[in-house]
Image (tube, rainbow, N blue to C red; front, side, top):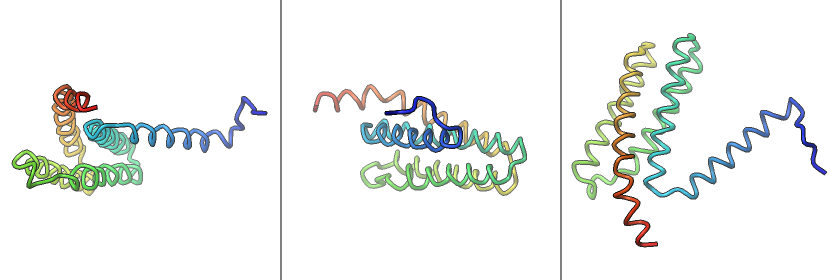
Length: 145
């Protein structure tokens, strides 16, 4: 009924579909805290891809990766911030995200690896801090369930 071997031409398409299903499943089952963690991971990956493309002098890939990182920052991390309820923390996060968008854009424009490295370091710090508060965030959520 099922052929256990994929034809080489169909393999990338099937693997892409599999990744999409896995990503969708992960997102649908994730807590809001985990979703932010996943966005930090995605930004980190895109910055790493941009840095690799910069080293290989692959301008198209560098631009694609930086554009995707900027989009994640703007639409995934900055847009949902509630500046009223979040107070100074939300405002500071917005400012950091805006700064990173600026540095990534300038890094793209000038092929500046130092700007990309700075953004990678900022995301790493934010991600580590976010991970550190997980027990405090997850415990009330588990008690409510």
